Image 1 (cartoon, rainbow, N blue to C red):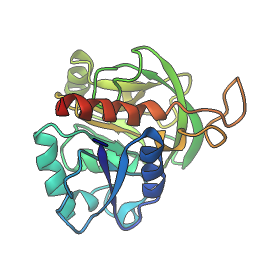
Image 2: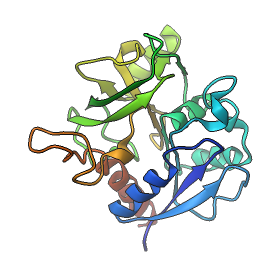
Image 3: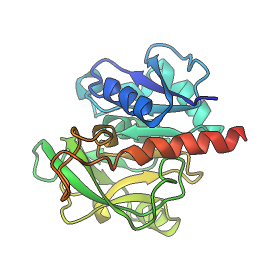
Image 4: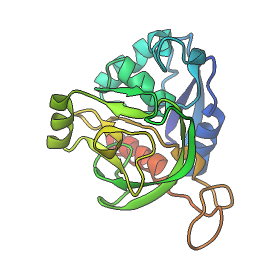
Amino acid sequence: MTARIGVVTFPGSLDDRDAQRAIRIAGAEPVALWHGSADLQGVDAVILPGGFSYGDYLRAGAIAALAPVMSSVTDAAAKGMPILGICNGFQMLVEAHLLPGGLIRNEKQQFIRRDQKLVVENASTAWTNAFSEGAEITIPLKNADGGFTASPETVAELEGEGRVVFRYRGVNPNGSLADIAGITNAAGNVVGLMPHPEHAVEPGFGPNKPEAMRSGVDGLPFFASAISAIAAVAA
């Protein structure tokens, strides 16, 4: 049975179609979901995509976190469904309290766009099981409010429980505490990160790699991981 992965579109979503394409390339069926409906249409996983939902008014992701679909996402997360928040989606997850901490204005007060190196710190989540722990990957980053912040106690808890999933390598582009680029919940089914794996899934359209320009496909294992996690549950 083909895995069905939903992608929620909010007013101001920018990368929802890219996420759908990445899902299709990985071998699953993308399902378009709407922010104003609480119906998840029986999907096996959900992606909250990047963009500028509601114009990032109040705080990035704050209004989107109150959308009808998020009540269903919260319930599904509690039942173990894989949930991935990318950039603005990560902001939604922290605003909805599905992940701890917060995302604030970049340290240098500028929008940043670059191919970013990351280290995979946790390869056991629903979205990272196709990676090897310690692997270095490169995927695009683009954000203005990407600085991860949390209390010292929360950061210590994340570190102590192995819940830092990705860490910036080489350059910390936005001033995130402890170079944190992505985190997970305690169960490992909810993951949020600022960089965009959906933009690194197809040769000729990804980041530059030493082997060839635009050849980077380091984002593809995110979606392959979810497919594997879904298959494991179905088995």
